Each structure stands twice: as C-alpha cells, then as structure tokens.
Image 1: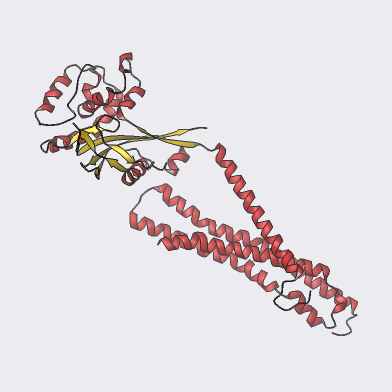
Image 2 (image 1 turned 135 degrees about the vertical axis):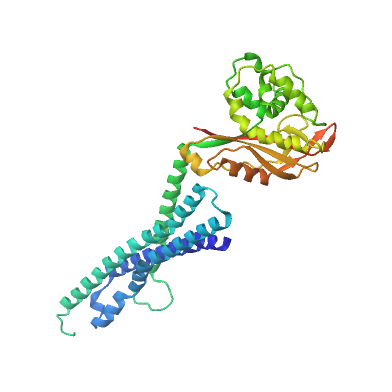
Length: 144
Length: 242
C-alpha cells in the first residue's frame, strides 16, 4: 500500500500542479493573442473563429476536471487511512485524523486549480465573442 | 501568430514562462509562510531520564536527598521493588542482583518498619510496580538476569538511540508525560521484551516503544561479563517554549 501513498502524494498533486501551469500558460498566451490580433487579416468569419477558439477547450477541460482529480486523490487517501486502521487496529486518534486531513488537501488543490481556470475560460470566451462581434461590425456583415 | 506548426510562438513562450514564474512565486510564498510559522511554534524536547534523576526533581522535604547522582539510581532500584523503603538513605544495595529469592522478603520486612512520610509519587507508582515486582520474583530463580536501570553503572546502554516522535495530538494539546519501560535485554544486547511499567497516555507509550524497538543496545555488565538484564528506562516528553 506504500505505492498508493506515493501515488496520492506525488502523482495526483503533481498532476494538478502540471494542469495549473498549463492552464495559466494557455490563458496568458490566449490573452496576448487576442490583444495583438489584426481582425483585418481574416477574410472569413469561420477561420477567425477557429483561430480565436484554439486551445480554449484545454482550459475548459482543466477547469472542469481538476476537482474530480482532487477528489480522486482524497478518496484514495481515505482508503489508505482506513486500510491502515484496519491493519494496525486503533492506534492513535491523532494519526487517523492527520491521515484524513492530509487526504483532503488533494481536493483543496483541485479546487484551487479549477477556480482560476474557469475564471480564465469565461474571461477568454467573452473576449472571443467581442472580437467576433467587432469583425462583424468591421466587415458590415457582408460576408456572413 | 498564425503558425500551426510545432514551433513555439512568442505568445506561447511568454505564457509558459509567466505561468511557471507565477507558480514558483506562489510556492516560494507558501514555503516562506510555513517556515516563518515554524519559528514561533512550540518546539518539543524529549528527554531520556534515569529514574534516579526523577527523585531529584520531585518535591522532597529533606535536603540531604540531593546527593551525588552516582548513588541515586541504586537506591532507587530497591525502591522500585518495595516502594516504602524510599526515604531510608543509609542503605547500601546490592539488591539489584537477585541471586536467591530469600533476600527480597528480608528487605521487605526491614523496609516496612522505618516508614517515613509516604510521598504521593510513591503511591502513584505502586500500581505499576506491584506487577513488575511479581515478574521479578518469578524470574528470580534463573539468577542470571540482573535488574538495573539506564544510566547506572553496569547497566545496558544505547548503541544507537532512536529518539521518539512527540505525538502530534499531545503536542497540540500541550500535554506532557512520562513513560517508564522495562527492557529485557539479553547478554548479547538484543531486546527481547518491553514491559510498560508506567504508561503515558496520549500516544506517548506507543511512541516510546516504537523508538525503543528501533534502538540498539549494549548488554549489561557484571564484573566484566555481559549478562542478561531487565533495565528500567524512563522517557519524558516535555514541551518547551522557545
């Protein structure tokens, strides 16, 4: 059961941290792209939409899945704690409580990753809509 | 901007670097806070005390009790079997080595007569010791096992001392405690058995036993020969504010 402990501690939390780094990096990249985009370059509305919504789905996926991954870590941690209690008998209340508390940290980190990701996603989605609307205004809805 | 290939665009690089630096900044702040918190949190000290030392610290009415420590443990060993004998200071004891069973009842008779003011501590310990002394009587026939305690001459000593972990809940509650264990150590220095003479509660006993199991010992000596022994070990868990 030692491997499970390592999997919860390093695997799940490491995965969540990687997801967080990716989400923030993509959000910043998208933000820069939207700031520097020249709407005049695009002839077609659909190609503009494709360019604008590129990679947004990754942020959305991270935002919606990070809590689940954190929850998985917590469930595994609680499983591990109960397994240890079952094997060694009631040892020390403090040990059990510490085990449970540390299991919950995976959920906490999952939420910490998910909340900014969702915020970024909504923020970027709004920008995409604004940019498309601006393109439509600029092109006078002639080529729709 | 419109590169669809594998090459990293300027924006991607910028995003990745900024994201990494934001995350590492968060980590640094987090660790700095946790390190800073550690500074004013209560640190704890675990002391290994000898039983003899304990009586020095206990409130004693008579001043002459504070004699050099060398004599203290031996006096205390006898007390540990017969708690009433405690305050008669003039005894010279080889009673530690139990060669025949006749010797001990003899001492009991002597001890019961000059009974000074009974100390609360002695009473407190009596419960644990009554069982312990029964064990001692039972094993007195084998004659090779000496009874001693850590710190006295010829007693077993730690080769590799593992410090016990202070139980978290006890630390949080600010509980202190003392655990007295009797370690059965054979003539090769192997730990055979642990008796709990005085349990500590709050996980102290478990922690102390855990540490003792991980430690290694050198055997007791008697006249230059390694012998099997039963040695008392007192472990105190003390919190100190820094």
